[in-house]
Amino acid sequence: MSQLDVQSDSHAPDHGHDHDHPPHLGHHWENPKQQFEAGKLGMWLFLATEVLLFGGLFCAYAVWRSNHPEIFKYGSQYLDTFWGALNTCVLLISSMTMAMAVTFAARGKNLAVVICLILTLLGAGGFMGIKYIEYSHKFHEGLMPGMAFYDQPNASHLWLPIDEEGRQAHEHELMVTAASNEAFASEMESRNELPPAPVTAEPSVIAPAGTGLTGLTTNDLDWEKSELGTFLPPKLVDTLENQEPMLEFAESEHAPGAEPHLAHPLQDPQRPPNAQKFFTIYFLMTGLHGIHVIGGGIVISWLLLLTLRGRFSKGYYTPIDLGGLYWHIVDVIWIFLFPLFYLI
Amino acid sequence: MSDHHDGHDSGGHAVPHKMLIITCVALLFLTAVTVWASSLDFDTLQMPGINVFIAMAIASVKVLIVALIFMHLRWDRSFTGLLFVSSIFFVALFISFAITDTKEYQPQVFQSDSPEVQQKIDELDHSLDGSGGHGEGHGGSGH
Image (cartoon, each protein chain N blue to C red):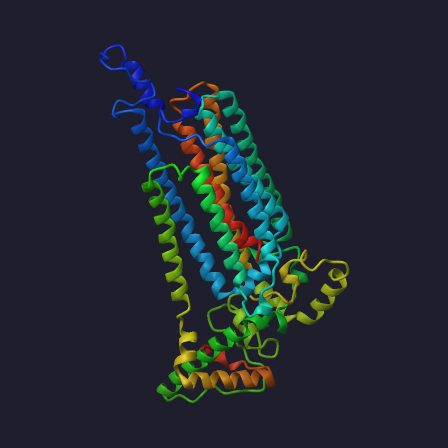
């Protein structure tokens, strides 16, 4: 826009206006309405790509949750509904002030536009502030995404192995997997005419070759834990191996007075396997959304600057309108994220 | 240009402030409703998982309100709305196909298709109920 303005200003003396047109109208447009409609169409196209961008993550969420509903039910307890609901309210109110800014701009009341934009900016800052409180709490508690969830140097001596109850939700699925693996293996064996693997009473190493996990024996772990052991870092496998003394230590040091959902899931033997998956998708989706909030904050600051410089009038406020659309789509995405993570 | 005619110079629409405030109050109310609805327990009605559908229905209503009023879709050309709805439609298509696909992996297919595997599952189920230890399922690939 500023480019167009500069151009039309600099060409003004020599291009011989035989028509009257406002300074904000690019020369390639018929009239301000056409210019505005084209800009709006472009903005909506961009918003559609934003929907598709988040759609990929919503799809990942849907697939993970349909496969492991217990992980989402469990992980959601570690999110504070109060902060989530407060953030929803902050974004909804800032959406309203943004829409008000557009209305004021259409009526040419620039002072009111400035006030509304400042309020919207405060909403963006408030949202990120609350997100900062939540994120720093998660980092402090070690509720990290991915394998960082298991990499807890200060608390590793407190890790408790998953017990029967924690496994219950997973049991059927794991059984089916193991059964099909076993059926497959026995069929392969029969095809190759090899004798079946000897079953010994002695502890035998059950970690598959190439995983680098040795010392894991059938005496320490049943087959389900060995399943877990194939993709857990050695540190946790150590903990699993030495579970008896650690269990006592953990109980004596941590259990009294510790609120169940303030403790790290690794200290909870009833956590479902792969509980870290919840935090992975949580940080991915809220993180990408947070980046959009920051982007929206930058856009609003820029609009504020332009308004203060008196660039907008009753006849031309397209950037405020389109920036507002962007701010509303950020709100729209959060409206879906809030129940999907906080309200399970 | 008079005030009651506002915005139409550049094609934009000025939504009255009163309407914006009412919209925001309605959205805040729906937020409270969705928090309340999440605490309802439908498990006794044999409808587990219905909470997520309620939450998504409320969220969809909220998004509809935001799009129609805050984002001016109500006053825009219908083509703009079509653009937005089609993007959501394709995301819905993407998710539903992915969900359909994720239910089709081997263990589940085996379970229903092959009586021999179902027999193995039953045997394993039985042995787990009894002694518990069963380390051979993964030992096979080790040597």
